[in-house]
Length: 412
Image (cartoon, rainbow, N blue to C red):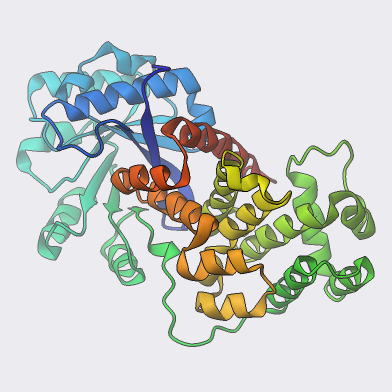
């Protein structure tokens, strides 16, 4: 397993409150992503998942969330499944599996052991009636399934103790349709695609945070930064709580604003201001899915550039990579154009180039993090060759990032 090179992708799954409850895990061999899929590819992929989860640990990959992954008939019948932590794994049966007594019996046994059973890319079929009795989640591909078929599936299954999951939800309009039709769970990046109709009114706390970010970036005097904090006591309290809650290697808790500014330093303060921007969005606070994805982007970029020769050009290159990643979703946060947000901040030219045009070293690393989120492994291979990174570099950075972002969202 240590010699196998593979890509790891995670696609978020949210509930009706837009809280992330799990990730679909997708693994592909780095050597085979550029070739046509073969008949046993899903079995091979599932075997890699088993190895990865048992070797690295589900807590490292998933944090507090559940993990969804696909199995074919051969993998479903394998005893290897029972090695996995039953309270955190969702076994997702591919649509290629035919319903028979053997499958129903196996699913019933797995459910009795505590596993969650899901049906992938499913449309209601009377032939599945017995299997529905042991199924916990049904996934519906809303892009490939006609609306009338979606409604019939929901009508037949809604009265049962089954959670209905809409997958490939990419726009706010699709999300609104799925909510109205009665879906319980959603998979896709609809919440990361801004719908810009007009300038959104930004509240005072967010304006203050944006002002603070600009001050820190240009390395303003500490007294000027402290005065800006004092203009909004609630923001000061929230930021202190945020800093105290996150493991940042400090030996003591932050007690006052001046203490925080002096102990953290401008680089760490800059990071937590951006995190506070995301955490201030609505009532979700640090559970905002934008925060989790933006923070993971920033951390992954920071770790990846440390493996590049370009990282040694300046001492703060990895910090600029972190800022690039975390700012890459600020347009989604404020629902305004990226050009407008970048114009308000005194950013270095390489960060501006990366955010606006996806160009330069930072732009290439940002592209890589985005396509990994989209599970586009073919493009990932091409980008890694351009950025002198390997699948091993990427996997190592991803695992460290998952641990870090889990600690962030576990804050109280």
